[in-house]
Each structure stands twice: as C-alpha cells, then as structure tokens.
Image 1: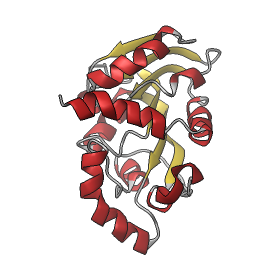
Image 2 (image 1 turned 90 degrees about the horizontal axis):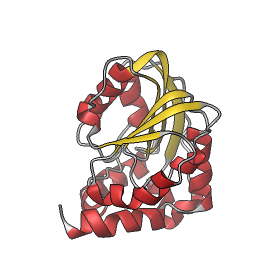
Image 3 (image 1 turned 180 degrees about the vertical axis):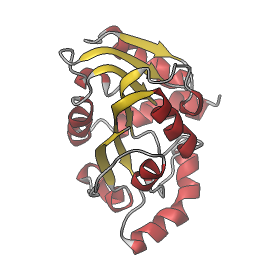
Image 4 (image 1 turned 45 degrees about the vertical axis):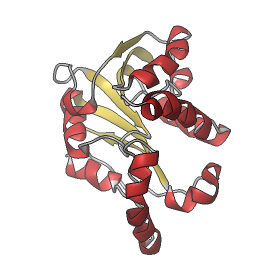
Length: 207
C-alpha cells in the first residue's frame, strides 16, 4: 500500500479526530456495548479506552490497514477488555452466523467499498435482537449542503482514502433490515469550517 494511506493518513486521522468532543461521542457510543462485541474498521484503536469492562465479555476488532493496525498496537496492549484483532474487511467477515451480541462501527461506513454488503455481513454475524451501534458522518438533510457534498466527494475520496461525504447511512441501515427509529443529524463544531459538510448521526439499530 502507499506511503500516504499506510503511514501518513493514520497519523492524520488521529490528529483530526482527537478532539475532546469527538472522544465524547466515541465514549457515548461504545459505552453502550455489551456481551461479545465486534468492531469493524477499528482504525488506530481510538474507541478502545471507552469500552466498559463491566459490560463487555470479549471484543473482536477488524481492520484491513496495516498502517492503522501499527498505530493501534499500543492501545491494544493497554486494553481493559479482552481483545482479539483479526485482519479482514467488513465485506467478508470470517465469523459464524449469530456470533456477536453487538457490532460497532465508528466513522467507518463512509469509507468501506460496499456498504450494503458490509451491513448484510453485520446483520449475519449479529444474534437475533443484537445491537448495531454506529457513529457516522452522513449526507446532509439540507439539499444545498448535500449538493456540495456530492461535488466534493471525489476529492474527499483521495484525501480521506476512500471516505465519502454523501452516504445516507441511516437509510441504508434500514434497507439492510435493521429496526431503526428516527436519527437526528447534528453539526459537530470540532470539525471547524467543514462541520456543515460533516453532519453526524449516532444510533443503536436492532437486528
């Protein structure tokens, strides 16, 4: 893989998403996880400190990038919950059906190659009634901002190593067969001047 995607981008990601407000969003999301948990798109492991050892029986993490895994190593060594790191991609998870109580994605579905396939795999490996917890930036519900997101996504895919600004993630989660209520979008000030183009949603969908 390239120098930028495997060495520079993982460092940039930690810098860009290390704001306390982003950390608080991560903590609120993964603090809900219970039982046997799978996180897809583990990245540099920024969610790891926020898993509750009183509620998480085991944590399995999947991340295809060697550069991300290198940066995650120190966090994995300091983990407060039992963690197994498995190389792989969300489009083809190497786990049995109904294996997990909870699946987590955190700023991941913007970058996967095939969102419907990843969601199908998530649904497959979740137990009936299991939770899918996700925090994602999404297509704005403001039409003007949405047009700008679509215009800028080709550039963002280069800078953000596959990241899309224009994915309607909540709609795709519902289409994949999950139960999901209304999910309000929020503008996150930590994103600075880009915040209007990076509205975020956080939700718990049920298989």
